[in-house]
Image (cartoon, rainbow, N blue to C red; front, side):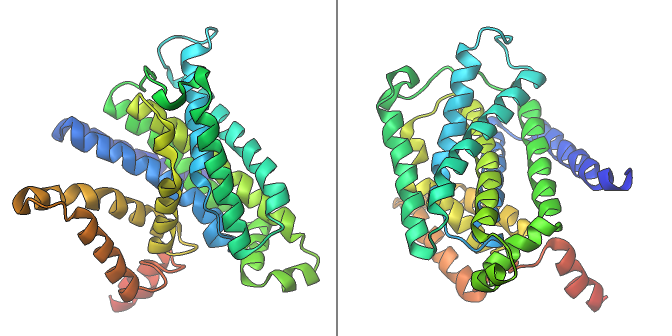
Length: 324
C-alpha cells in the first residue's frame, strides 16, 4: 500500500519545488505561461485516452473543456452556500463538479456516437463542440458573446500551480493505472483490432464510452482551471482550433504515450511565446510560420511522435541504461 502511493507523492513534491522556484525567480508573464502549460497537459493526457489508447478520433474536446469552465465559473460566483473566496476545499468541489458535468456530457454524446468509426466519429464530435460553443453564445445568464467575467482566482501563483499540479498527478496516475488494468487491455484491444476484440466477447462500444467519459472528466477539470487562471472566459476561447491543438499535442507526443503528451503540451505552449522576439526583430509576424514548420520537421523526423508509444521509463531502459 505504501509503495503504491510513493510515486504520486514524489511527483507532487517535485512539482511543488518547481512551482516555488518559478514564483521566486520569474515574473507574472512566465508564471501565466506555466499555468497554461498545466491546462494543456491535462487536455493532451485526457484526449490521449480516446485518440491514443482507444484508437478513436475525437475533435470535440474543446466542448467538454467549455462545459467545465462555465460550470466552475458560474458555481464559484453564484453559489452562496460556499465561501466567496476560493479555498482548497471549494476549489476541489468546483473542479470535481466541472469534471462530473463534462463526464455526463461525454456519456450523452458518446453513447450514440461511439458506434461510429473513423471520420464519421470525428465529424460527430466536431459537431458537438460547435453546438456547445453556439449554445454558450446564446445563454445570457452565462454572459453570451460578452463572456463571463470576475471569476475568482485560486490565489497566488504557488497555490494555483500547486492546485493544478495535484490534478496533473491525479490525471497521470489515474490513466496510468487504468491502462495497466483489465480495462486498459480492453481499450488497447479496441485500438488494435475492433473486430477481433468483439469476437472474443469484448463490448467495444462500452469500452469506447468508458474511455470517452474518463477523458471528458479531465477535460472538464482543465476547463475549470483555465477559467480560474484567466478570470475571464468567452465562447471564442473554445473553438474548433482548441480541439485541433489538443489533437496536435497527442499526435506530436506520440499516440499512447502519457510522457509524450506532457512534452508535446510544453512544446506547443512555449514555442509561439518563445518566437515573439523574432517578430520584433523582423517586423513581420513569422511566429506561426516557424511554429508550423517546426511541427512538420518533428513529424518528418519522428512520424510516430516524439515518444511513439514509449514512456520516459521505457526510454531510460531502452537507450540510456543500455548505452551505460
